[in-house]
Image (cartoon, rainbow, N blue to C red):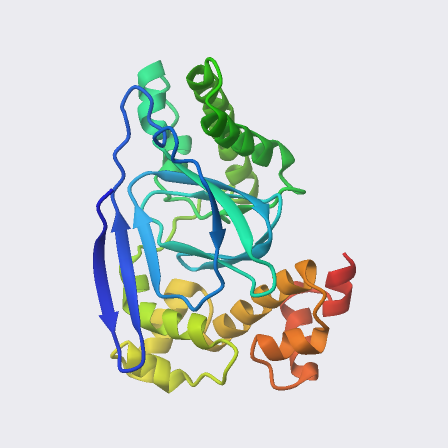
Length: 301
């Protein structure tokens, strides 16, 4: 697979936006045999985001962390799955204290559906195009049926037992039906995603937030990284992320903290300092405002 890179430079950092074109066999439009490896995601600062022209699904076998997909930040842990639509800009990172292991595969459901005659499913194809807003991390305990079929597809491709191609095709049809059902449950009106051009414009600021979320962050400095005045930066940022820059920073910090609370033994105070809060009271206040519960209650749940 070739990689094409766009670089966004600033005095303090460089973020690469990597386009990864993927070629799949028309008769069996899935990742090549032998490519289904377990990957351990690191917790180093973000250096790039990437996107590709096919659907990506994954399953988390160990650990915890966060997925960043376009304007969404989603915590994950062992037993969760992911669905990333084509051309969605994304990256996944482990929590510092809980490195995660994932297996990801590519597939082109449109080729499969066309081959077997499933052509009159406009809502499903809208989902496949990524034009429907959707939380890309599938929580295992909430959507067990969907996560189970994702894992079965991955395991069939990894093991390659007798008739595995037929099994994968059948499981994929089940996956697509369950995916469509899940998307419509959480998004019955089919709200469209924002285009990623504006995300590219604010990507230097996102990169700085991802790198420096445990430090003090100043909005005018983020605006300067993007070559904008603070007023225009706030407007574009809020349009894309559906949150103001300051709200986004707090959401990012709390999502990272929630993953650490669920999967590490670190104290609440240590976690609050690790994600960038100068006082425990400020951390507790923002955590409850965003999640609806106090940090210690989150850990108990």
